[in-house]
Length: 349
Image 1 (tube, rainbow, N blue to C red):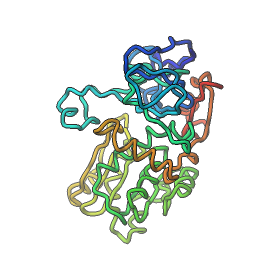
Image 2: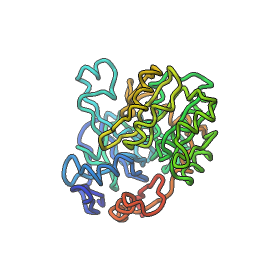
Image 3: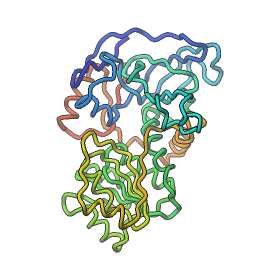
Image 4: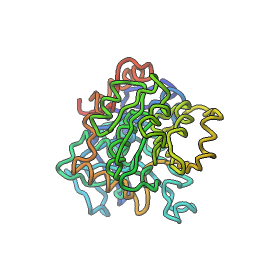
């Protein structure tokens, strides 16, 4: 089959790969219909390289069941499905406590198991979920990043009517705007340095847009909230700069949730650090998208709210490409050649 394999930093190749086959009684073989580029993929491509040289890459996807092992009963050949790409060990203390996202051996396909930037992928049956007819393959390929955002919101103490600030309006931030509303936010403030992204944020539900190059984000937010700040501040940009600035957005006693991953040292100026102490902030990390019972409420909720239309990813999708275009588009994205939202690969074109 055709696939994208990551060999090293900035070394992604469109090549042939072995076709996966059913090996265990609970395996499911899936024909990939849509696979998305994750923000973490860009960092691994540009800065980190693969876990295993030449691994078939990619972990956000949807597809159609081709074959199942004899123990699989909840899906069958021909079914439209999404799949959680994550593996947990089930043996470490975190897993025994049901805190699966904290598993000591947590990994995803595309890292140490063949991934979804390919024509076919194999996963255990418990990872595979049937799609309702209302959710198309492109939307379903975004279930995983949506579940990542939901996981972060489930960690908060949000109450209906809360005010939320989302720093960074990439795909995670734009999903965070929508999840904030699902969780009952009264007002959502979107923050970015790109006017086009802010326009999309307002399209998907943000009540106010803050362009943080015009004036410091916290100063604009304080003007809008009459000096209070917000109940929950979401860091979704994953940059070292915003990872410090986000502390100035939350009100006294508020919460800060880190959903972005800054692949560099974060240097926090005294002004921002003192906000944690003086405002008695709760700072939450959020990792992956799973909980117990696996794959978790994040996945069930995402499918539900995509089905109702309250989570709408269509405004986020900017490109639909063939796998052979993969190496070129990764270069363009890291070089910021054009505006890229959610980029999907279709292995059939």
